[in-house]
Image (cartoon, rainbow, N blue to C red):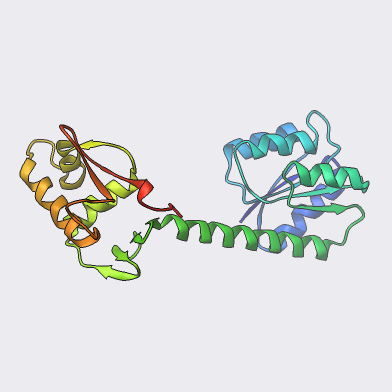
Length: 234
């Protein structure tokens, strides 16, 4: 894990770097907000510890710039213990706030806790992205399975890929040729009938009434689209 420190007091900066490196972290130690911003823009940073009162660019304004592009955990470490400063810091996106003088053991514990929460959030978010759900229809990308009301739908490989492509692009209208190119990955050969047959097979398996489909709609003279209004996208 990579940790950024932005602290203008050299002794504190060096102590933080030493203690965090002893815990196994890689540390970028910077002396002001401008230097810290350069690290954020060019390096992978998993957590930032920012002083508030720094030359050139203070911690509050540095955090505002960080939040425009990143959701990494940020801990403020400062001599300013006023409640309004805490409220401001947390209000603009800080995750934690420690007032000097501080316990190094407490700081290490808070760093560990913030990294753990961040990792859990990323993991949960990735799990959500692995599933596409509309109404009772669910496609699980990790398992390459499709379910209707928690019952598995038996699709062959091309049917699954075709349905997945449509569900990943809801409300977008595709011509038969576009769908063939996307799923069969063939730039030169195109079979209009192949798409029609596969769409028909998919409808027979996922639609309660294949003649009046709610998921895969035919757009006359153009092709097909997946109707996301068929259910709530979770």
